[in-house]
Amino acid sequence: MRKLTDYVEMAATEYLQETGKDELDSRWIAEFIQDCGVQDDYPKQDLVDFYALVQKALTINIERAEKLARLQLDKSSCSAKR
Image (tube, rainbow, N blue to C red; front, side, top):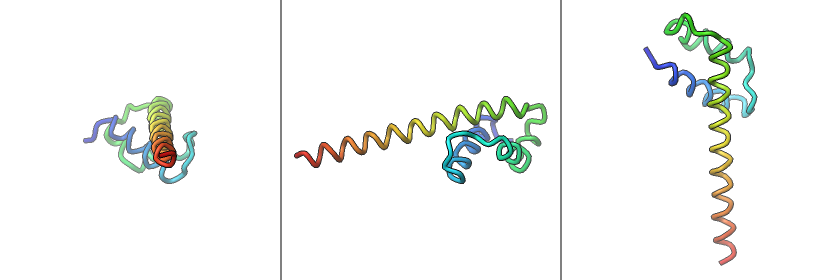
């Protein structure tokens, strides 16, 4: 049995890779819970609560990616000035 946090991270990563969107789709997450075993491992897990956890993880992942992209741009612009 996987940890709930593993499912949350897996859902956030998979959603971002599949859609590229930062706003989680409720139908997508409902399918994920059903198809990926979350319901089997956590039968009392509330869909709304799981949605909120995945949305938060998705937002954090996007913010990290944006920050990394900014750092890369800063590095390349500093290198170009030299």
